[in-house]
Structure formats: C-alpha cells, structure tokens
Length: 356
Ligand code: HEM
Image (cartoon, rainbow, N blue to C red):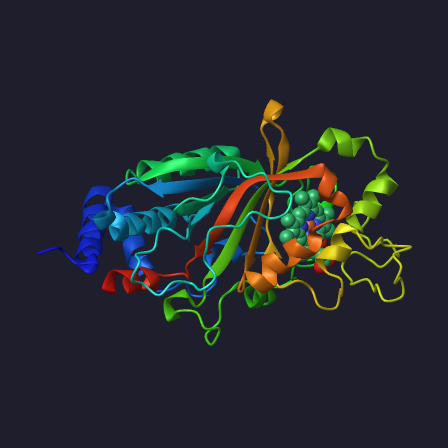
C-alpha cells in the first residue's frame, strides 16, 4: 500500500527531530501553533532585515516525497527564525499536489511588456528568502538551511542589501541604486500592512491559505551609468518624488500629494513612476513593497523588487500594467523573478496538504 501524505509528513517530522536534536524538536513544537500575532514572517516588524538571500529551488526528490520535502523546508525556515536571521518560504505554481485546492491566483509569472526573462533566473517550485542583520549571519543561516534540504536543488539565487535601512514614521525605508529613498508609499503600521498583504476569509481562497500572502519577485536590472548622467531634477521628474521622498509639489514625504490640481502633469509629469503607480494618492495600490538592491559587479546592478499582496491582480498586476510606458522604463530591464504564495504562520497549510 502507498503511504499517505500524512504518514510521509509524520515520518519526516520524526526523522528531523531524531537527526536535529533539541533545536529541531523545539521548532517542531512551535510549528504546532500559529504565530501568536498571525503575521507571516516577511511582514513582521516595520522594516525588513538589511541583508537577504533569495533562492528559487526545484524539487529534486520524486513525486511521493513532495509533502515531506515541503515539511523539511518549513522546518528549516522555523529553525533560523532567531534573533539574527529570519527565513520564509513561498510556494511556486508547480509544487502543490494536483488534487489540493490551490491559491486561486497562483500561476507562473507572465511576461510583461519589456521583460526579457532569463529562464535561469525565473520561476521555480519554491522560494526561500533568508534575511539577516549582518552578511555573516546571512551566510551562516543560508548554509544551515541548504544543508537541511537535500530534497531541493537550487534553480537560481541572488543576494541583496538595503542601504540606509531604517524606520521613519512607522515605515521601513532604504536607498535604492538610483539614490532615491524607497518605502514612503507603504503602510505605516503592521495592521495596515497585513490589511494590504494577507489573504482574508471570504476572499474565495482555500481556508488553508487565509493569512498567507502572494509574493512577487522581479529581478530588475537598472542602467545606473545612464541614470547617473541625468541631472537630479530630471531624475526627480521621472520618479515623481524628490530623492528624499518629498513630493514635487512640496507636500512632505509622509503625506499624500494631490494630483487633481495638476491635471496636465506640469509639476508631476503624467508618466512619472509614482503617478503611474498610484494615480489617485488617496487610494494607494493594495501592495506592500520590500525590495533589496543587488550588485553583480560586471553583470550589473539593480533591484530585487519584492512585493506582497492579498490579491495579485488588484495589487502587483494592476500597478505593473499602469507602469507600462512610464518615463523610467528606458532605465530598467526585468530579467527574472516569479510568483509565489507565502503560506500563513503555523503548519495548518502543511497538514491540509498532507490530509488531502
Ligand atoms: C524598476 C525599479 C523601481 C524603482 C527604482 C522604483 C522606485 C520607486 C520610488 C523611488 C518610489 C517612491 C518612494 C516610495 O513610495 O517607495 C516608488 C514608489 C512606488 N513604486 Fe516603485 N520602483 C521600481 C519598480 C516598481 C515596480 C515594478 C512596481 C510595481 C509593479 C512599483 C510600485 C510602486 C508603488 C506602488 C509605489 C508607491 C506609490 C505611492 O503610492 O506613492 N515600483 N518606487
């Protein structure tokens, strides 16, 4: 008789406890109950940790090991969830068993206008994101996680940092490779972050997915040399904010500008990034951005753009479509990334899959 997914999952839990000792056992116990505040790991705290390793993995084991392999990835993330590093996983569209009710909008990331997706930097069965307070703890945590996951094979990986990572008026801010401060358009509280980013009951999603979040990664190469040849005022008209976040009409950075008094874009051009992203500043895009800068030396630098939303179509996709034709487009090239679903805290989602 074929073992059920549940038996496989239980077997693998027991094996990890035996092999990993106290730490794994503690993590297994913690997994029994959801995180007390119910917020998925990537959305806890006002600002992301300053260093990140983003890995896309493919299942290297055979199909029967799928649930056990997901269980191992889940536990590996829980174990590094300590003071210096935090990790989480995201499910790719191909990794869920065919008979499970899936997050409705989880699909392979489409190719948007202007994208030149490199297959070696795109998609994947599983996203693993490890974040840390220092490069050293990032390396230690990444090695530790990968050591625990022989069932998974790295498809692509990229690491990044958030220079000048800080919190201002409740928002996490950092400096991007274009020398602009990012993060002002994000919500200022954890509750408002969860409101934009997490799946709610009644949204038509499977119950195991409630409390989870759709994460989009876009590897965006930035033509920094070309950008740096423009004057700062030109750059500010392309973004639609000053480098320090103030709006072009003088509105302070933590408040919302009004575009209705500037219908022809004399102050904030109609094709400026923020104006395309959020044409009505009183109705901010329902997404939360938490990106990192990457630097691959001669292979270029750019943004590991990352955003979370409860609804992919209303969040990322609506904004991405509006950005088509923006003035910034000639300085950017998206070469990779993918769509993933970050399950809610706890292991209810895993049990739902195992019981299926
Ligand atoms: C190509 C690289 C990108 C750069 C350099 C960039 C830069 C910026 C900057 C400097 C701001 C203003 C400060 C802030 O609110 O964070 C901003 C805002 C924003 N960006 Fe981007 N961005 C990029 C890509 C994207 C993409 C791919 C999306 C989504 C599809 C996006 C969505 C937004 C949104 C929603 C806002 C907030 C607008 C508001 O409500 O004020 N950005 N971005």
